[in-house]
Structure formats: structure tokens, C-alpha cells
Image (cartoon, one colour):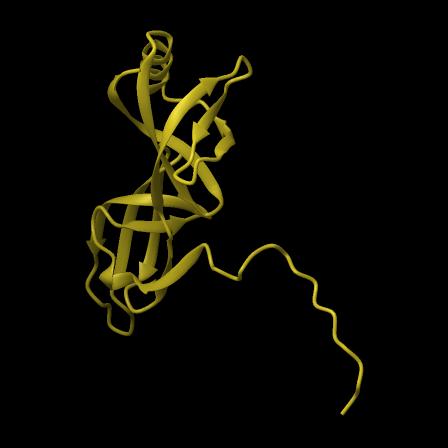
Length: 159
């Protein structure tokens, strides 16, 4: 036994994983899956029959929840797939800066200033128009695997 104290470097992460394993055969349409390191919403699942010596295979078609790209993957149904932890949070919009970042009010009363305006043109114009008219807007932010993006907008009336 040594009397020395051990120093541990902290990485500012509680060790919470960005994904969790789930058996491929149990993932359904409208669920989430990680395909090519991107968080995707499953839009189509088809399962092939087992071959002479093989596993049944699941063919997943998913749409990336952040950029809308279509991705596909084929996995044996008995194997585990990564499923992302997807969170949705509502924030009140305080300000839009000239460089495309938004300032949001958190539940605790602090501000969150590290989010860009969405790339979706329809949502972008809705946010800008509503903000310039002085409406109280609440944006929904979807976060998964260390990425965040504004995905929806609610109007809660005039200020």
C-alpha cells in the first residue's frame, strides 16, 4: 500500500455516453439510430429472412436529424446498434445577432448564446419575421451526440 495520493484528470464529462446499445431487431420506424456516426430518425426498416447459415438482417433507412441527408445501413438483427440520446428543449428567443447566432433564455434564467440560426429556409424566415414583429417566440432545440440545432418554433403571443 502506498501513501501517495492519485491525481485524476477530469474531462468535464460525467461519463454519460452519447449513445446506448439496442438490439437491431427491436429498432422500429420513427425510432432513432446512429448510421455512419450521425444521429438519424428511422424512416424505413425491412428485415430479410435468415439464410442457410446466417443471421436475419435488418436494413435501415434513416434521415439525419440535423442535415436531412438520407443514410442506409444493414445490420444482423441479433447484433447491437448504437441509439443516440435525443433531447428536445424549449427556450425563449431573446435576440438574433448579425453573425447568425441566437440568444436564448434557459429555464434557470441564464442565457445560451452558442446556437446558430437554423439552415432550413422556411424556419429561418419564420424566426426572423416573428422576431422583427416583436412577437414572443419559443424555439425547440434538438440535441444528440454533442450537436444541437433549432428544429421548431412556437409563437406565444405579443410581448
